[in-house]
Length: 199
Image 1 (cartoon, rainbow, N blue to C red):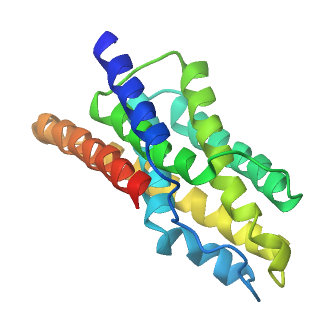
Image 2: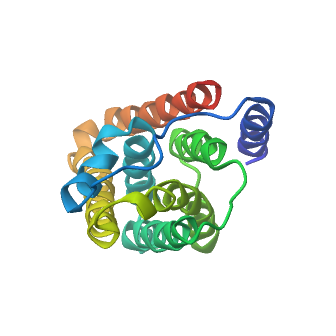
């Protein structure tokens, strides 16, 4: 637990010390449902974060399997509304990079906090992800359709993470290997967050 806190503290320090990342192109024009649905698959930062949320939810087990992804999606909608209304949120891109570092770390260390702590954590990061895309919507031709598409894609990516974790652990003979593979994937995601913070 103490080691995990130190790693998270180091990740936050890296984010605060880095320059603003430019992982998004704001102001999409003519964006509709298909653009919203496809966007998470084209943005590596979002794709990794959303799949990792699913991995950690399944790794955590129990009610977290559905509560954690649902919390992320609900908070992402809230963040999207903030962006849509033009309400500023400081260091959005750095918050997204931090989400990769922290979410990847919780998977890598198989961190098992109380459920409300995990839900609060993913909600905080989801606001940054939602805000980044809400800020794009005013110039989109169909912001509602874009949002619906993006939300459905998010749910699909969460499901991919959950399914990958649960299927990997299904056979006991592969359980140890699967656990190592999942934790290694988390470490890769955390490392990618550091890279995004400096891009």
